[in-house]
Length: 125
Ligand SMILES: [Zn+2]
Image 1: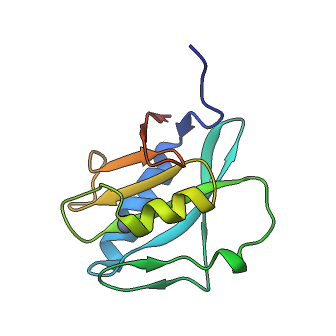
Image 2: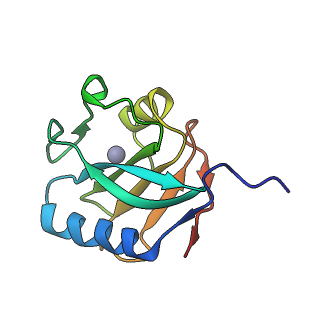
């Protein structure tokens, strides 16, 4: 079986995502993610990103040209971590690995998707 280019995420990064999502609640938390050797190891906060109760706007035109950035992560202030239409649009326009975390923002309430919005497995390291 072929391993995806991005196949893992450090536990520490997931913990940061869950903590940041709790702090941002009821708004959405948005960030991009960096990976090295296929493992996501860092969040990169976007100073230009706007979050609202319903959707996060992702200013792709502000993104630095940085090939270590592999995708995005955002939170849903609800109990669904399914991508919305806007999320699918974002996924297809940028990066190949995207994470959505929903309430209660714990280590089991997140899911990862590819650029078509299909669920993918990420190994927690
Ligand atoms: Zn969303």
